[in-house]
Length: 400
Image (cartoon, rainbow, N blue to C red; front, side):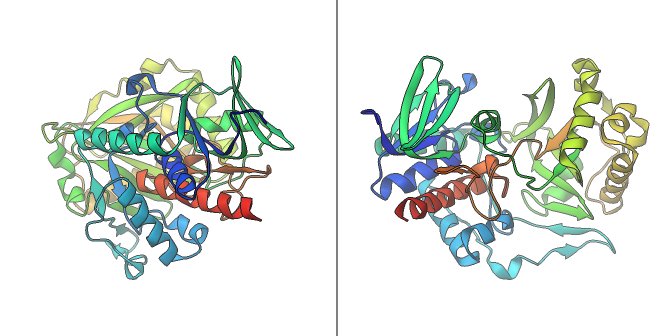
């Protein structure tokens, strides 16, 4: 290998990548972190952390990581270490007794309440600055747009358009959803993962319309069969991010002066590839302005009356979303008489995931994935913990 060779290369400097690099470096390994800075991040690390809701949700959020960690106690330990690295305090940590403590709201609906550490935009900026400084002291950090990954008999060669930028024995891909295209170019096979969630994001002009839902917790989740609320931001703002040839509405926590609030409604559908292709093909035939304008409406939404949703998702999904909206109103958790916008399409788990079973391994030697690319759990804290677990697996693998 060249003089740039290291023990580990970490692709991505979001929470997953930074935590993975910290674990590896503090184990005495040489680490190179490679990250392509977001234009809106002004050269800072942190990936999409500042645009991902500003909530660090504790257990029972992220239960999918329990078998990956090897049990609840081990997961709880890594949660504490991730919070400590980010200089956050785990206020009111819940333990195993709460994992099955969903409260029944009706004969069919339940609510699962998460204890979350909710940061203001300024606090998120401070967190990113803090962990960026820490990781720059522990590892070599490169800003580069990677276009090729190549596995050789001695490890991985990572290249930008001008050629090789780093070589390493083991590679951890923690580049979030964007890592998928690069991994597939390298020949890594996607796994089925959790399937596909589809739905809408509701934005209320007066956040008091969802105050009773917010009173259940900063990120309370109402569940009705395969349908659920998702990512409550109170107060919160909407932004749209590109995905293939369409755009998807996201929501982030805002300062207290923001009057709006937003949350998503998602339902799980089977046949991820077919369902995603249906939605994308339907939307590609429609001008973006048609589904991005989100006019102000009032009343419980009937998604059957929105042809674009029926076309993209199908009638069964439109029905489930409508029944769920009606349930939220009947339970008094959402005041649908207040003005709101229906942002569409909301797609979750639409990206490729590559982890095999309850691990962070892929089907390629010396290659691990972390965060969204692994597909075990969603959320800021979960990404950080996934990075730590991936690094621990990689350390065990390399020691064999």
